Length: 255
Image (tube, rainbow, N blue to C red):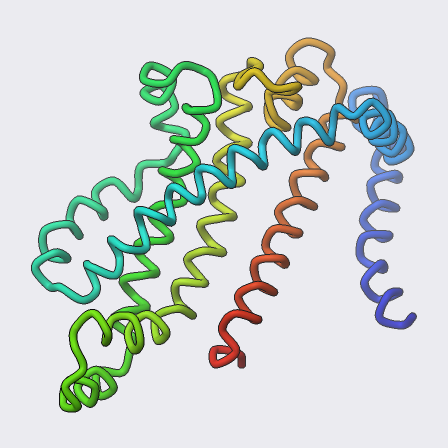
């Protein structure tokens, strides 16, 4: 109970400050209010709009994240183990890494339209770089003495990669997975906000599209805050779930 109270103390204080700020301004209608946010959240949940938007966005995120991992992890393993591969690909990776995912949105729309393929492309692009960089770093942090010992015992290269390098690099790859998933979730929200139109043929254009509609057409500030809170809760849930899965799958990496 004490731990629960401590966890709720800061959110309660922030909500109280929020309510006082609403009462202090001259035009309270221009600022979202806690009670109205709760009412808007209940309405969006009851109608199913919020769940549909989150589900649509999550589907795109998971698909793009899987695509990014399928490309970035093997490529990172190759770059970390073969110097010639790293020497040729590292300048290319580092040249594109500073380019934000939202900056390639016009190209994605031109190539794939405003549907789900464009969103998946943006997510995969955003998640690729944290994954490949952390995979390379994980491979380089593997104790070279273990690799040398395996070679001394006559272990083949592919077996060393699977039995020595990959397990040793997995903790750092796990960090890349967490970072990549967080960046992917951020990218899909930004992309849906920028497109501002329903796409993919589903029941919703995603949670980002919902925020755009609430801003551009109805100016529902309280509903926008509901979407913002939902984005934060989903991000926290994804990260905690991934951390738990990584902890269970890599017991040797636990602190």
